[in-house]
Length: 92
Image 1: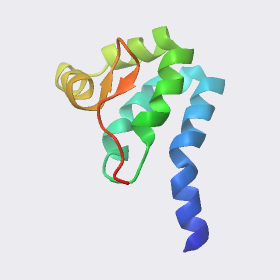
Image 2: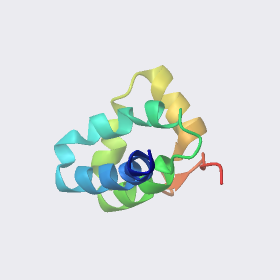
Image 3: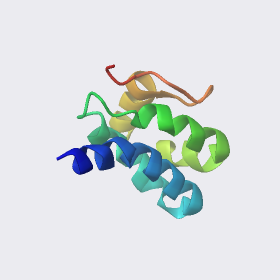
């Protein structure tokens, strides 16, 4: 269980690193945000800062490709695209 816990803790960081290496998966990465917030301890939104800053255009394009409802939810509850700042933080 401890090993699985560590794997889960590293997942947001590992996914951010992976999408920086394979930016063609940016849409999948952005879409996963809805799933990731199901874990109150996940720092997925914090890790998104690195991706947003490093690949800003691709990140914004992926958010803009979400449905209108999902995009509105993302930019109002999850992440500020202009400043690359998370709006949702993990519970400590």
